Length: 336
Image (tube, rainbow, N blue to C red):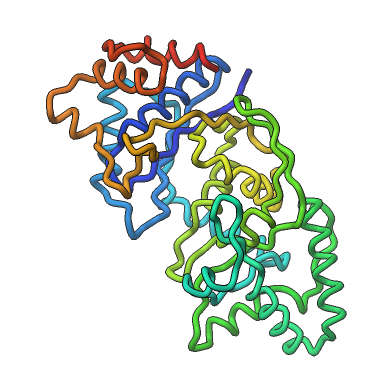
């Protein structure tokens, strides 16, 4: 099998055991399926990303002995994201949202997992402003939105464009001239069930409109959101397989929907692996200051000891026997 898989850590802290387990799964999948490995540094969050964390990612991976075929960093890809945004705007699929975090909490329901499901308040404001600007009847706007939804549902594969009066370009400039600035830009997501298959967990049928609603793709500081940046990257970098933790599984349907809007009809193949959790049963997190691999390394713990400990915590070993990277990858590969 030919293709490409990616390992994509964010430089918002030092790598921890959860990252090491995820790397083992990625390298094991690459070996099993004959894939190239792409290392992507996802530094879209400029407020939390740090140069020292970027350097540490390379240093830690090289210390364990991981090797990759290609690499990229999101901060160098702004032009690609701008072009993708412009293409969506020209098709009337992006609108400004003025809702604050407090408003979002108060005015929208939550999904079964506790995620806010945006009900589209600012889309209505958006269409009302368009109606006023274009002196178009609301019936025409509603019909145009329905046509837009039909295009979205078919991944906008037809040549028909949303009427020029409904395009975001002029309206967005009007908003930018106003004193009130939008909190973010949202993407119009179709009310459509996405069918996708996880190579470990099986089949899923999910509707992003019911999971989260129209979601942000850029914030008021001009930062790209995780969902948007990774979709543009996965398309442009030719990623065919995505292996990542179960904590991101719920993002899959919305990413497939967005990739289709961006022009990729066939999504990557997915596998979501189990997580290592802390004593309280929570996933390891840099936000929660999870114990880092660098701390263990500085304390004199060897790479082999860390590999054995992670494989033990993941249930692959009955004890913390030190492992070479080769053996650790082979053990994980047998579970795929």
